[in-house]
Length: 161
Image 1: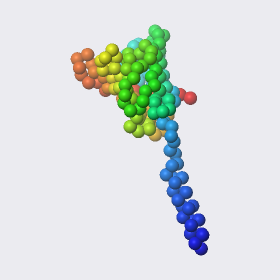
Image 2: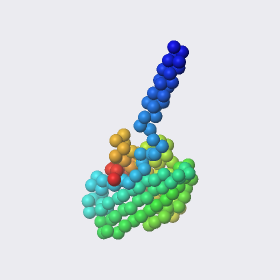
Image 3: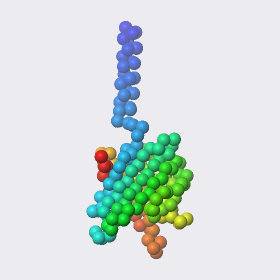
Image 4: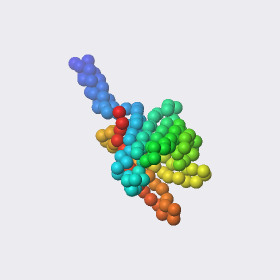
């Protein structure tokens, strides 16, 4: 009888452990390629880019890789890539994007906070969050207008295969 009691306890503990870890993963749902829905950009249609693609990767060792490719209406491309520690320490951005330094933190597995600077001046803060469906991502972009007025924009991305 004692053996059955121990078996039952062990089975219950294993079942609880399985339930507690079900659906979790060491991989952030941010990892992957994302396409911006340019039709929803808060700008005139003729000023919108043809496409914006973002890619996020876990670079290992506590580092995060971000890559963006913007194809303007003219066909000109802007690119940026960086691999940074997720502890908020700044590092360089490679490419021809409107920023040359970035810092990132991941307060939750589905949220990335990115701060950008260009030529020693603040450029923007962006918060990326993946929805429960793991197929949609929202970017909240904080910038300042030429007169110093704070501006918040929301952009919508969908996961690419």
